[in-house]
Image (cartoon, rainbow, N blue to C red; front, side, top):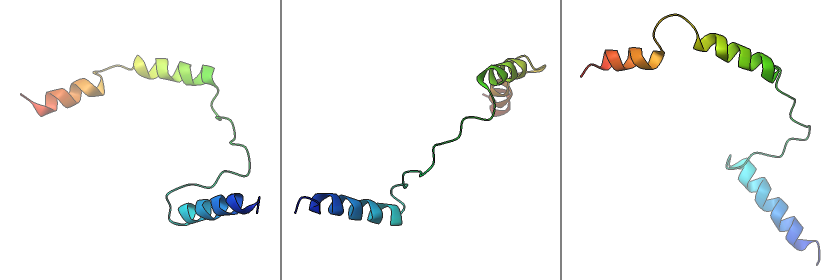
Length: 65
């Protein structure tokens, strides 16, 4: 009877996965991000220095007072 709790847990997990309330654990490791951190930071800096107003300011202006 030692294996019984494990069987109950596995059955519960299977039901949760079937109902979409839980995702199964991936069988393979998650691949690393294809964009290196240094490149991501460079792109973020580039986008932060784009000409024109920030999107947040444009939205505020369109809302009016």
